[in-house]
Figure (cartoon, rainbow, N blue to C red):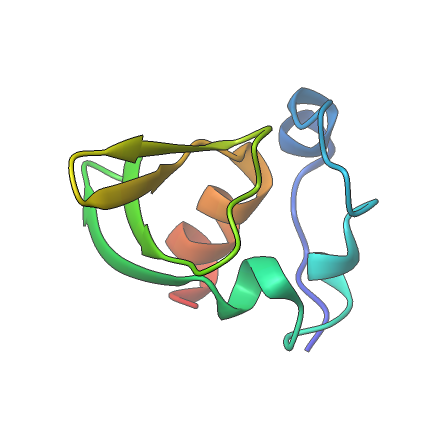
Length: 79
């Protein structure tokens, strides 16, 4: 599946170390990081074994993803 994300959101994802591979490959690491829960379409708790230090932080025993592109993929496609 190719994900279509607005250019404005892509432009805010300035620290992507994977060159937006998530948009082309649904088996990409960022897509495999399942969103366990989401609050107000803005705070995304994820289940990820390999953290992306540019956009993921620990919060207690959980991890939160702040990647604008990954968040929009979840909000738009529920993936």
